[in-house]
Image (cartoon, rainbow, N blue to C red; front, side, top):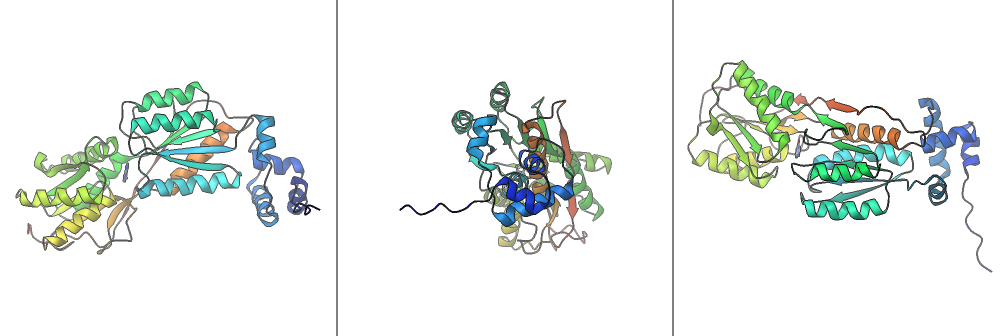
Length: 347
Ligand code: HPA
């Protein structure tokens, strides 16, 4: 005799436990009608307590949905995308959606390979952390032509007519440089990245801050590494010191670059912050360096959440139409131990 199948909970059990109607449970799961936060919480608690899993295959066939979302990223080793992923999961897991991640290693070829297989499986939505490439627009058009809702996060700005969650990079660069200026620094290196719109905007902010303080900008202080990696940050600072330029502060365009810069300075016996102050950007290594890094925090998890919320409204059975949503998040200065007031120009 085959063993009896394990009894699973039904939508009715969830409704009974949460003391709401079946229609309300369905609205929470399918996100197709407004439900107050209090009821959403009650339903989610009941779902979790009962271990209820909606039958997505049957529902999918009926509603022509796959209950899956794809997040496409350029670099799986970059922790900013881990933060965004957590935010996406915070929202989508509650809605019982599957989230898959596709890593492209900045390769257009991999992007189109992933897109072809992804699009065959018809995800209900795509989140894209785009990078600086002429092919991104073509990828976006392909997704849009198929009518799959798309939100971009952390992207170059030249992609129009798309929902987006971005960071005010220019303002962040301005605030990071302004903070170093307030500490009395004048010889500030901007340590950015080639071919990155993000880094370009952060540099624009740096330039505006120096201009506003009437400090002439020396182009030799504007250094561009090959990538956002610590290795490249480290190499760039070795080269800068060896080239003989005199600086007492660094505005690194990411925390990983700052980590590399601090390593190079330490190896050359240049103490942080006594000899050189270092500010990072993004907050991914805010608590992992010694001395603890002063940095511009980016709300990566919150950005992922917002992207998923925007997407879930577009994906709903009664979907939200209307103009594009572009949300601009503000980076926030976190002052820690890698910066200090300028005592003397020691380098
Ligand atoms: N940090 C690291 N990598 C990045 C960032 C950032 O803030 N923006 C785009 N790539």
